[in-house]
Structure formats: structure tokens, C-alpha cells
Length: 520
Image (cartoon, rainbow, N blue to C red; front, top):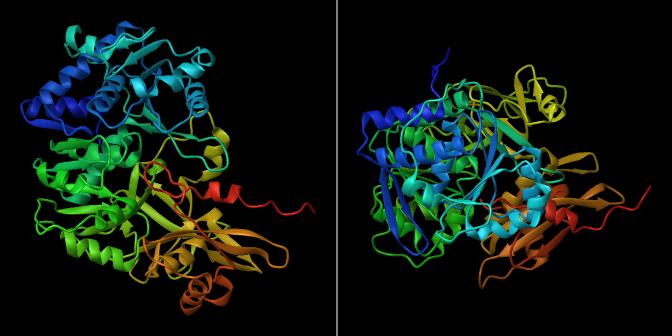
């Protein structure tokens, strides 16, 4: 037995409903500025109605059901209803093409699918190729749709009684597909027990109480929206404030208006917030701090904390670790800038070489993680599971190093290590220096074929509006801070860089643009 006991996702919600049914659990603001809210009791009633409908439609414990919804209350209702009947949620990135959707529905063997009108075309395009999908629900619409049950009708007339289904805490609660770069995505299996443990661990890390008001603006179909923004707040009986999408013009006013005490952001959000016209009351709010991930420049970091009076707490995690597995301490230790902190409670982290041997402080190597919570393996992909697991340690595929205080520093993905004349170059190190240049908004660095030295360094650079910097200037800047072999050989100026829905640069697209090396 562990800290989660026998609690499951439905039991977690049920406990809070029993404790405080009339407290506000969910606040939602849509893109039109319309605000709705639901108490714990009201939210549970919506969950019960959908859960009972799914059971009546034949969804069984162990079945998988895909959820393709933007940020909205219906996403959370679907998540908890699916888990309440013992089924497994499969969240779908709403930016996926029809082909990507078909792959996930087929790979996960989905028996059910819930979506909204905007994403129906993708499903209709592949519906015939997805014969396992038999339970279909359309949310956020009152217009009839062939083959779909309307969630609005279910909630208006459905059975609101709570019916408990016996669920093994070790059984899957959801399958989260990691964003593939060179191949199809892999489905990371997340158990009920892991979900509950992560909620407890994050609530303790962040010092959350029942007065917490957690702002969720990053997508709910990713682990950040779920295991940083939602589950920890639910664990302590707090309130979750969900925004339909991010708007740089509206976001800070929304955070202030909803009296949010916690949020999680990425560099894209930070930079666009800084680009908005300053207001005299920018520093007046209820926010305790913001969790933060991915690199940013010293100037941007300082400007953000100073202007908005918000402390940034940096950390690190993956889908397989249910989000955060290392973080700078909030209250019990020293926070370091440009550092991903210490392992959170219940985790161990090592830095190892290619043979799996521990490396001393100051030497970079692969980041491996052990402890609870952790994913249960990749769905229908034992080969991939075996490839990343060794004696209970999960190989993240990322590189980092420990400093003398035992704090972890991130370098880059293993595949982002550029091999040049026998030297290893961390792309992230070059990007960090480029991003510090006053004219550079952001950059991405990759290795390209070099007939003499194996690989050359190529940088893709986005300049700040109105700024200018020649290729020679940027190379000279890099040469000031980096060894000569790390200075980019090529610089490609771009208006923007390809990114995922949460702001991660998709380097595989940049690599795909490059001419292949000649056949040997």
C-alpha cells in the first residue's frame, strides 16, 4: 500500500463532493467572455448522467473512449464519466489531422468517441476506417448529428444517480499519446493510482489548500493541464478555472478577474504577455506563483517577474511521469533560475552515461527517473516499453547534469546533441546564447550534414519586431560565449518557428526541410 491507498479518480471526486458539495469546483470562461461555474455537486451530477448513459450504450470497464474537445467543462465531465464506468480516456490533440485521429482511434481500439462540432470533419473523414467506435457523443451543440447522442440531451434528461463501479487502482485511467517526431505517437498508460499520487505530490510541492484557484489555459488534452492544473486542485478541494484558449490581450485580466492563485505557463505565453502594453495595475493580483517550463532568456525572466510581480518556479516532466517530476522548491529550499530543480517527493533521478553508469556532478548524461508515479508502459508497444525501462528506471531521452548542490539542469533531447568532429554539442546551449541576444526573439538549432566534420550547426532565428542582426553579428555573439566548434555555421532567418499546441518547437519539421546527406 502507498500514499494513494485504494483511491481512484472517481473516488477522488466523490470524496470532495461529500465533503463540500456546494463549493465551486469549476469556473469556465469561453472565448466570447461568457463565464459559467459549477459546484462540486453540480459537476458530479453532470458526470453521473454521462456515465450512466455510457453504461447504457454498452461502454464497459476496460474499454477505451477518445475525447477530442478544446478546453471546456465538457472535457472534464467526459474524463470523469469515462473513468467512473471503469473505462479508459484517450485524450486527442484537437490540432490532429484526420489521419492522426484515425491512427489513435485504431491503435487504442477506441469503443467510444466524444467531440464537438468543430472536429466532426476529421472524424467523418475516417469514420469508415474506425469500426470499433460504437458509442458516439457530441458535446457543445444542440443540433442533431447522425450517429451521435447529444450531450445536452443526456444532461437534460439523463439519470443523475451515482453508481459505483469496482475499479482496481492499478488499472488504466487514461492513455496519453506522446507527440511523435520521427514516427507515430506512443500511448503512455496512466493508472488511477498514479493519478492520485501525482495529485498528492503536486499539492504538497505547491503548498496547495482548499482555497486554491488554479488557472488552466494550457490544453487539457496534455499532462500539464491535467496533472499540474486540475488534479492537484481537486485533491485539496480547490477550484479550477479553465480558459477556452490563450489570448495575450485578455489572459492577465482573466487571471486577475477570477482571483487565480496558481497558473502554469510556457515561454510563448510569457513573451506574448510581455509584448502587451503595460498597465499600472499589472502587479496587483492574487497569484502566489507560476510554474514554468522550457528555456527563456535572463532578460525576459527578469522583465516578467518585475512587471507582473510573479515568481516563476521552473521544473521538468514528461507524459510518462505525469508531468512534473523535478521542480525548484517553493518553500523548503532555494530556487535557482535556469535550473529544473530537485526530484519531487517519491521520485529519484540519476544522470548516466550510455552504459547506464552514474556520472558525477558537472558531467552531462542521460536523465533517468524512478519512483511513483510513473506510466505503466506504452499501450500495445512492449518493444518501446522495454527500450526505455531498465531495472525500474525510465530513460527519458533527455540530457542533463547535476550541480554541486544536487540540482538538475536540463541540456536537451538526446537527439538534439550535434556530433561535430568528435565533439558533442548540446543544441539547447547554442539556443540559450542566441536567445540572449537583444535582437533575437527565439531560435532553434539542429545538426545538418557536413562532409568533413559529420555535422554542422544550423540555427533558425526569429528576430524581435523591428530588430535587426546580421549573420556575422550573431556568429560573433555566439563566439563570445561558446567554443568555436559550437558557433553556428549557418543561420536561417524565419518569421516564426513550427510549434506544438503548448509551444514546443517541432524540430523534426526543420530537420525534414534539410537536404539529405549523399548516399555512401
